[in-house]
Length: 362
Image (cartoon, rainbow, N blue to C red; front, side):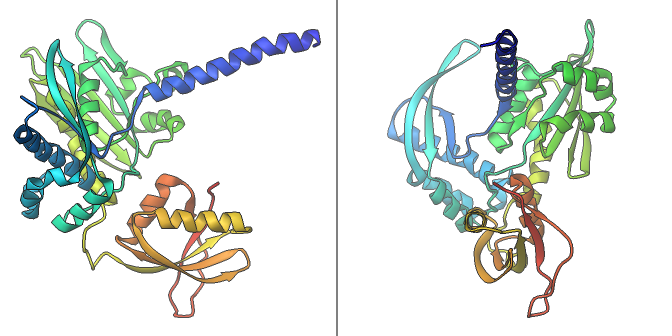
């Protein structure tokens, strides 16, 4: 090994270590919800108490999978909850400590296939588990330290948001607040809800949604907060005040969860929304890409079935039967980044213009 090679090797090791640490840090600041499980406190391990906990846990999972926070609007849910034990695949007991207090919980895993059918039976929407991820910028105005950006998972606001995100099924990420972030945006800009600065600083994280929260504690002891989210050039601004910080996260995430559910959840038995569309997919230059394209379409929850109508050069013409709208199909495609829309439609034999899609997946 030459002298220059010996110099380069430690440098490369350090660079790799730095890169791996940055990846680890980014994962440490991310949360992916557990969609089909629930942990419910119990007073004993009796069958009756487990039956009560099963109904409570199933209700939590139904909210997460449907995107509907008010299940009372669906009468069939009441009967469904009385049969909650039928949908449990496995369960175990665990002791959870909260603020030094130990409480026994029953941890239940529900059947994904069974719940999808149960949602349809109850007339609830089904929100596929492939969901938009949300980057959260938080700024605190402290009476002694002034304005500062927050990403500490021990912070009560962050904890409140993470707990609420688990209940609603929203994947959350928090910025690293490393040198790149410090150069891109300041706490003052986040506090001022500077949309341009926030979105530019968020670009490196490649999330579909951005949530900005600012908060301070008033002299009366109440928490004063303002929230704003951005998703596909749409946004919403709202204020929340509460003396209990533990509930702020749930209240802050509710408008965002409801908004995303309206876009992505598939409505059960909605004949007005479901229908058949034609799509052209290209370039599909080899059999491997052809197989990947069909396998991918087969996995999409919004696509109930499809037929390959023609192959012309490197382009596939297909008819898709949807369980939702064309906009919901496009929203699902945007999450996976394997197919994207393109222009220049061509006419089918029936005179309809197929949706043009470009295969960019691997």
